[in-house]
Image (cartoon, rainbow, N blue to C red):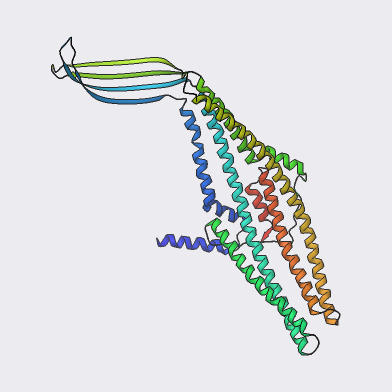
Length: 433
């Protein structure tokens, strides 16, 4: 027990020693996330559909045994009383059952569905891991911005008070700086609370205390999608989307269900073989009569009428097939729409990041000029506060735009069925401790 606790303690120390990157978080989530574990169990259960379908093509063997006590009294003979134990071994081999053939084909398609759903769960876990990771980074950036803004405004507040004391400024500047400072304190509290919430969300995903995370490098450039063609991504989503693949298999399952139900009108042919051993012991005479019967034959079965149930099942299957076809069409259109939206998110995100980078540069230059103007008396403390507010807002917006653009890139690959762990490793290269 002590050794186990020591091992866990060492593992925790190793986990927190270095800053974790995105791949680290994904691997931890893959081990512990409940939603992903549920998807794994569903995948394993779905794979059993295939052996179940194959079993219908194989022979079934049954063994039955029984003991009967018989009293026989007839008008043409003496009464008889005897015990009749019996043992029967039977085998049935389907020769032609159209329904069973369709069930096997449906089972193969059901395996394709669960495989696609499992891959979707993997992609969803990657996206959730990345979103939780970037949410923490953004909350951390917002807190750092709020703290820096509070420090800058505190400096202006102190300067305004000193200037008022020596008569170089009015009380208005002091009141303005105090109001900005108080508002920033409230923003800092909200940012700290938001960071705590995002860390708790990350902990829920990985089922472990939130580690120190590597941050995004300041010089990160958000590139354009490759290929830089929205229609190409839409086609790829239509052809390779996992959701579309699952929907296609579901539509084919529904089509085969129609054939399976129509097979209810068809005859079935089975090979039957049985062996029965019966022993009759007469109570009065004490004699034992044994009989052994071996039977092999072909049985034709045909349900000619079942109260209209077969026709109803066919109509139900046809309606479900039409629904599945419509669902497939909707899923395909949604995949194309999602691809276009994600593509525009990457393109517009890259442009927004570029614009905000320039906005930060311009805001820094404006703040320097405003501070210089305050020193020579042509700018007021309020002007400096406004310039500081613009700079911090631009930095906050820049951080948010970078994370959003990177997430749009992951969503674009996911909807196109191309998202893989290697894409997370690419983002790891943009991080720094």
